[in-house]
Image (cartoon, rainbow, N blue to C red; front, side, top):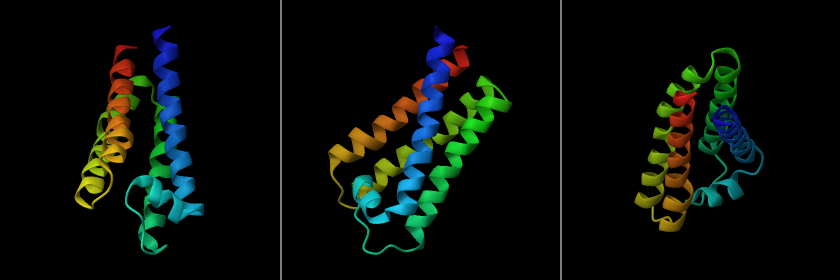
Length: 121
């Protein structure tokens, strides 16, 4: 049961990264508004965010498939820094606290829970 939950949460989080990346690539303004800090332009930075998030999702899935749960858990610990940083970015740029904590900080917590579960497997 623990294995199913650990793998399921890790796969879901990695697929969400892919989805977020795709959203920033195909609908950058809407994605930026959902991020918590609306974009003034559809410039390279939104494309970079899309590529970053999509790449992390693919890398997470590859680690889980080819290297196993321990490697994925270490990856998740490192990746948790991204939504923590996103929390600070939203707060420092006048974004809503609800988005900063309800989306980004909650994502960091979910990633850390996923890492703990994967370490336990």
